[in-house]
Amino acid sequence: MREPWWITIIKAFVIINLVMVAFAYTTWLERKLLGRMQNRYGPNRAGPKGLLQPIADLVKLVRKEAFQPDSVENGFVYIIAPIISMFTALAAFSVIPFGAGWHLWHWHIDGQILNVPIALILVFALGSIGIYGFIVGGWVSDSKFSLLGSMRTCAQLVSYEVSLSLAVLGVVIMGRSLSLVDIVHRQDETIWFAAPQLVGLLVFFIAGTAETSRAPFDLPEADTELVAGYHTEYSGMRWGLFQTSEYINMITLSALTVTLFFAGWHGPWAPLGPLWFFLKLFICVSIFIWLKATLPRLRYDQLMRFGWKVLLPVATVNAVVTAALVVAFQ
Amino acid sequence: MVAASAGNILTWIVWVGAAFACLGSGIAVVTFKNPFYSALALIGNLGSLAVLYLLLSAEFVAAAQVLVYAGAVMVMFLFVIAYIGHKFETPWAGGPTWQTVGAIGAAAAIFIEVIVAIGLKAGGRLDHAPHVARSFGTPSEIGRLFLTDHLLAFEITSIVLLVAAIGGVILGAHSRRAETDARA
Image 1 (cartoon, one colour):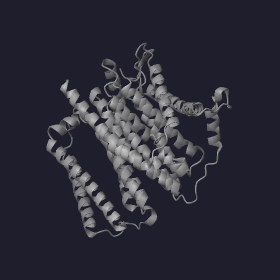
Image 2 (image 1 turned 60 degrees about the vertical axis):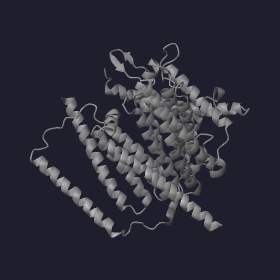
Image 3 (image 1 turned 180 degrees about the vertical axis):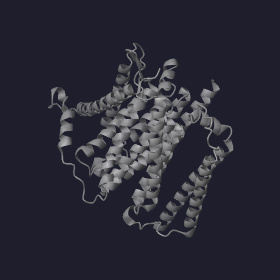
Image 4 (image 1 turned 120 degrees about the horizontal axis):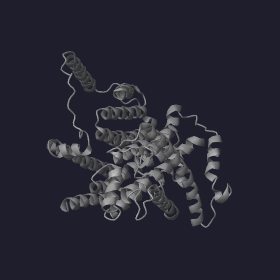
């Protein structure tokens, strides 16, 4: 049974807002956790435990003057760049399944906004378009720091995108589908792919950290070298959009990790559905933050060498071995 | 029936939008003075082509088009153009004559194709909708075709790509060696 189109629209609206709330409280969680790991309190003034801090930040960003450098020759491109990044980051969440689907009165509601047979490729395609926001934003700002930042983004994201896609190939071979829903079902029937695809999981997670420009791969916006990288010349909510899209990319990547390797909404016991999904998502995001507090930034040559000479061969061997084993045991 | 015609109208609207975006961005690619904007227009062109593929129910090809061409390949274009910076003069102002000849030839070929299509339509030979299987355009079907009917073309393409990759490495290593020699 298919759900009516208006339910899809309502669901899309709800999910977008949930993701935005998740983003806001990821920033809070990050500042809080980083603070505790560095032996300080983190935000604790706005509301109990600093819980209203994200809202205060939002109000601040919206009220701030959004200036634009004089040397920007095309204001339209300058403004559209953060919007592109934001749009693709949010759109990628539409294919992530978070529940088995429900019956409400006499309507059927799917556990995801869209179930397309090529969901996985769709997420990657949206991600590869989102890169343009960063590159174009840095280029059109007409500042050396911005340009260097976007050049680094460009090189880093292109290098690690290859390993990222190869790392999921093992999962696709085992799940026999590119649809995220099918992959989750398959894991429920057999085994969570984190076990047989441990290598794939590690490569995926490392490459994913690089794709989202998180520490230790935060070279594109290394603040000691480049001020802020590609978003140096952005301020106010335009800067906020860039920042939002980065965090949402991280959340999407965590959701993808959960879906591909940890059976999505299925739990080891108790059919809690979406609650399992959010619990796993929370753990995954916390690991990202933990990495940021722990690891120092890589040097540029280390980054390139690691990406092409370690990660890519490992991902390739993993995909080939998985394919051979799957064929052998079929 | 109402739903079907509403779907048709929607398809028409999307088709008209994508087709004109395709033409417009194609013209923009060759008219922009700044190569960076030309590259951006080319991304738009590839994106609207992907929408046309979607309308032909080739979802996988559309996604691959966005991922590979609009995503990975065009990033390289932008990377190089942004690195060269403002030092360029409109690089294709008065390119070699063979380029002009090639462009005119290609335009003539497309023009003839359009006339043939209109002729077929007028002759009533396009009245029967082709039979399209449900599996058309799915990843598994495309994979099956690659490894059966079109295996030779598939393998030759992979060899061409391999040659290009090795060639790139050799050219890069050569220029780096020349640089160290010059420094010594």
